[in-house]
Length: 122
Image (cartoon, rainbow, N blue to C red; front, side, top):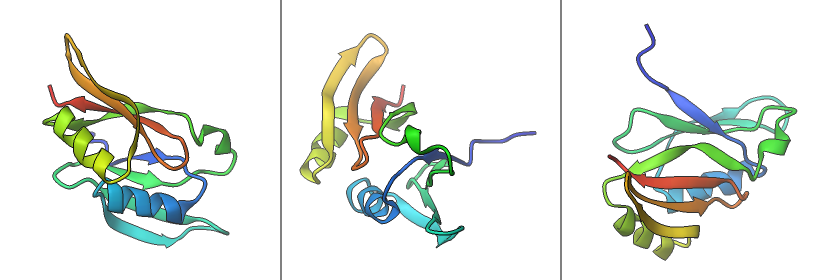
């Protein structure tokens, strides 16, 4: 039986720039970084404390996905605190923390314009 989602893919234009953003600004860790075809690398990152990781890779023919809204959400115990920490590291937010009946969320983007929801764990 399936036990978890191992990783999700984030389409990026410049893999090196994306790698620096996700490791230096978001604190993700490199699990794999190896060549994969002409001009591409397979870059798999882990999120400290999480079972699911991300891959910075754009399959051929999927370039139109770069800079779109990520269909998922990153969770944190304290959205406001994480927002302040990431903002201090230079992460650009398109929506500051906003309280809803279900919890709190904010929206940030990476250097390629991909947008991500940062939400409360529960």
